[in-house]
Image (tube, rainbow, N blue to C red; front, side):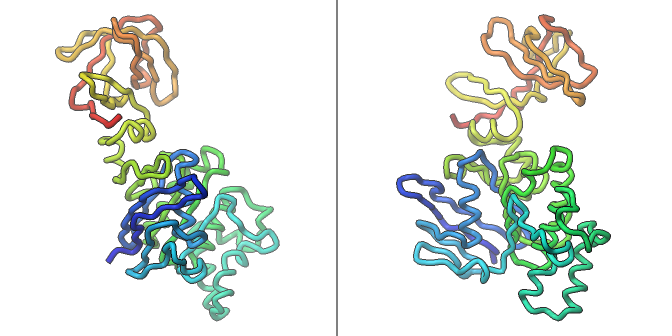
Length: 327
């Protein structure tokens, strides 16, 4: 049986359609990210799953039972879900241990059981030594770990995360992506993760739902989304790409799929000129204009593949790397 099913849900605010005809079926223990730009409807969808607002149409089911419809919703506190917000929402007047154990106190678990669970989860999130500290004494990453521990310790059946890493610096965001996935692999909680950052979604997710203007563009595992995008929007939003028009059709061609050399290749060679470049440490990012073409192509090359501006080069393009997409 599926753990969570969203059937044709929609949500409107007056004349504005925030979410339209959204359907998703999640298996127990699956990690799914809702990915898209600001205003695409992903947070509204998450809030409907949480029970903070009813859908205007459609239903949400959990374990085969309807928990949301236009007629009414099961309250958030009765959904067996935990939610982590962008702001962490940990209480400043409580220690780390008290914050993590609060949900267990509300559930009136025995004191010894609360202590055992709190100690275990703090060790799992590598915060055991900081149990007695207050939030003001913690870094942003440590506060995020407290929020994760507090959400997981109550053993929810569904975990909801709303842009949980957006307040962290770039290096810490990268670290916490892997931490969130590690915790998921350990506890196997069915998880819905909202983000506008495609790298976060790629690292953490079993599947990604790409949203645009309230609708689903594509649902697939990360490698499928990247390698076989169905639409121009998905191809441009997941990673970097070139759009090539041929015979009235649009193709996506990834920068790393284009060979770049001074020697003419044996097949599929196109002479071109370097018009711009940027060194990014792990690779060079080149803008290369095929001779006779108005539009340059973006090409990724290794750190030792050094070409000068205005230098003539050859491009080698494998036709199999060109993926046709809907406009």
